[in-house]
Image 1 (tube, rainbow, N blue to C red):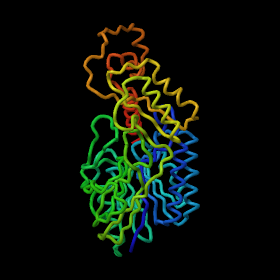
Image 2 (image 1 turned 135 degrees about the horizontal axis):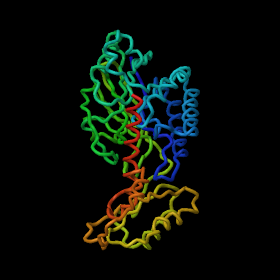
Image 3 (image 1 turned 135 degrees about the vertical axis):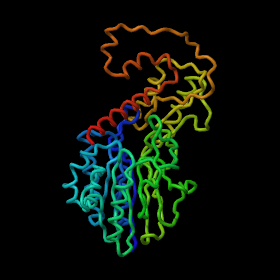
Image 4 (image 1 turned 30 degrees about the vertical axis):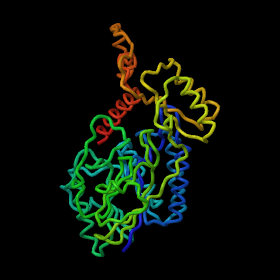
Length: 411
């Protein structure tokens, strides 16, 4: 029996990019495409493999958008199952707390992962993670700290015992597996990779989230082919629905997946996402600006010729920029009413010989140090000593630490 799904992940609803720009319009544009695809294709299920939200405590407006957009999907495709799992950016308990209400709309939210203690329970707990369709089975596993192969295999075994008709089996997960291509994807520190064998066996398609580049593990050469077919089992990242940063300089898509039977073949079509805002690095030819005037003139000309997008500048390291350079760029874009957006993280090129800065020793009063409760505040006061320090990455690092601490407390 054939099973057809649409697989996507890493929505990051509510993302404020470059600490300034709200992406609601971009997500609305994406959901219009997703709704049309689901209406035209009539898949058995829509799978969202984690990182539904960008932060664990999204605003009321962001949560309302989530509700409005997925309710609209349900109205357009009432027979289609919608399955969403929590990712590392999501609050597991908050996702799980809404489960009972969303069940009424044929939508399954899985937030809390199974604990190792469940293995001591009588069989039956596995059903919390199994969604049964006429055409097959979906095993929905949210983000988990550490490897839980025995738990996962227990759930897959329960499906195998029931699956007498040889229906397709899909497993959902949110993690980084070995051999994945993390190009353009920024991680704090060293990302922990799990061997795909830790996800057990008995599935036909592993629908992954977490890595933003669309790819099929073991077939990276086919990353951007419009249509491919492989023997089961297949492990795939659908990729994020939007570029989450300028470094994700590759097309984004959702995956339309057809599985003919359990142990059969898996066919994948990439449905290309038409992004409302594209990302541009100037100069487009890959060279670098050598003066602020040259850079500003190029920005002025480029935004007059194009419609909208995000801009990042590539500048030679030896170029002197006035202290208000970024503000000058913002001023150039101001008349365009946010149709043009600026990434203030400049791409510096060329090996530095000498930055011309004299070493100086920072002096802090004891009382001033005692009042610094935020590590980022101290780093901001000392950043001039570290010209290559990227404050956006520093802030992101501390936010990641905070999220992980909150998640550990919840678990």
